[in-house]
Image (tube, rainbow, N blue to C red):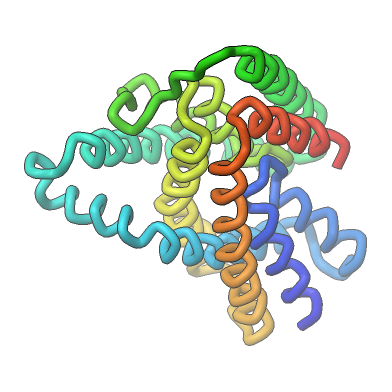
Length: 263
């Protein structure tokens, strides 16, 4: 029971940070609860994502409702909602296709991929350091909003989210970093990344976990803690993003990404 509580808390905190929550869960489970096989731990980590899925769903319930209504009445929706809806459809299709292929091709080769994924993370962190420095030096900043989303953004973000199936790569780290490098407003980048997680997490659990994972009361407890801590930390992160300078926000984000290379 204690194991599921701890893993649920880890999922709730690290899901929104540019550090792989799955990687941290595997690290903790293998070092402190060593009785489980790696494959089972990964399946449990995916299940715990449902807790943060519910947290994001509730936190962005108004946006989710608007997007759901757009599904049935696209033409009458506001332009910003149309663009976000189209972006999410493209990104979800691309990331689902790429993620499924990578999962099948590289399944069982986690250790061999560790070095390459750390290299990707290192490059992203360094690029963000440069971006943050340039933003701090700039006198004014013109950041993109929802109305400037296009098909290229959907394709690119779908590709980056699909890469997160590789062990050690953070989904939020990849997607938020890419949006920041594309010069989108930091609060919008976080929000859009969280919205992107909804269909992919739900679909991943249905496709990979629904018929294979044995459900228990302890796992439900882990799910509850994942949800509660996810709801608290998502609100905290968005408030921080609104209060500090964009450039400093990017630098903090870059520092966390670079730190994750050594975890």
